[in-house]
Image (cartoon, rainbow, N blue to C red; front, side):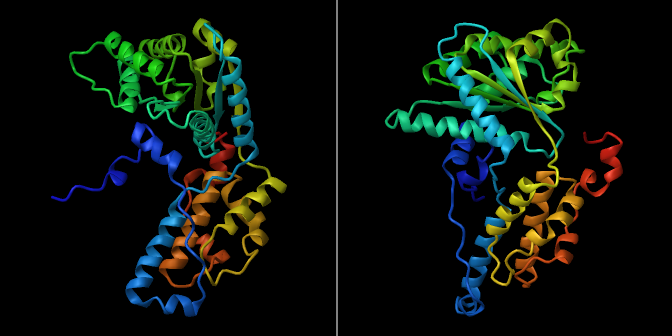
Length: 337
């Protein structure tokens, strides 16, 4: 059996290889050809070119929204403030509804930090400036320690207890000069359960052992149990909260739509088609950037596959969205806040 190439099997951000590919990958957009130039490629050439364009539109375009810029600015400030701290380091929580760009915000902060670290230490190949993990559902302290170990590529043996895992992780991170730890899906931690409280304590212990700035992201953290009680008060006293929300229909929303339109690789697409539909796109997606990206990218891929090579309102309407975007009553009922 043929083994898939590494770039296809190790793309997860929760592994060091996957994270580094995320940092380094910035493939150029395919050229925009005329009908004549496209026909001149021949059948085989067109198939290869179309596959490249499908891959281009499948990639999640990162538009540097005000939330991303604010997250990067606050994160960089905290890294500097924590530089000489020996305890009680400050952190950041990015919280909001699903589809409002939390993961994009914290990973862009991590990317900015790592690129800066590489620029300052161009010959230090052994550095690991950023760690990215997600909190598994029903997580236990050992599972959290194992997530750190998995990112670093450390073996997790059944006979290893949590102390062994923590010491191994702390040792590697200290030697590798880890400066930021990104912890996603924090809403999977509930302080009302024994395991949840122990997971919160484990993350706190890691933050005390590692000279790094911890950045959390999760759904509606400010409304969860994570900021209540004695443990919650400790978190609230050390972490700055950045809320993410759906976008109102304003100049920033119109800019988001225009930026996405500029990335399209469709030679029959008429310029400003999407910008003229920005109100419709806002109504359809509820101002959710995740739904907007899905709709535009999906319509672009359909336009390549059906040969129309342009996005129309009908093409946008043909792309099914998530439940929250398709059912406004779901949003108003509290399914997405």
